[in-house]
Image 1 (tube, rainbow, N blue to C red):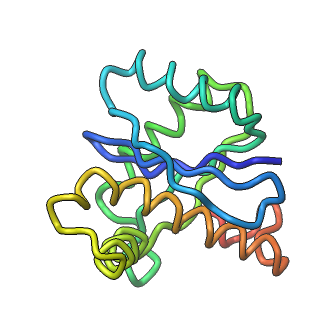
Image 2 (cartoon, rainbow, N blue to C red):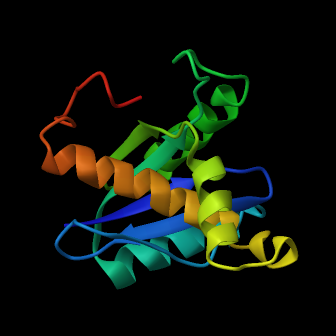
Length: 148
């Protein structure tokens, strides 16, 4: 079962996919957030090409676990996805994923200018990897409070 992770943004949607074994997350090229028809087409294409069984969407939370101001836009995005995509969609805590993505890209030697287009998908990969690790440790059962 492959999983597609999406890191919602107003300009770009970061994208990552798991390997066939569900062990490793790999960042892909981001998708433009607008127009919606193109975004939907891109997501559907990935689902078909990569044989995706689950979509994971990052849910923005504050460090204390409460929901931040961006949560409403992400909830609207998840609702839209559920109305247009026929596979299961789940949200997952994305605290610090962008920070980790920036750090990883900086450590890999990417210049700040070169990181702009990659950070969204790298954050999606960090999000997906945390989910995969929680799955393998038994911490992410359906309905588990860890899922947002």
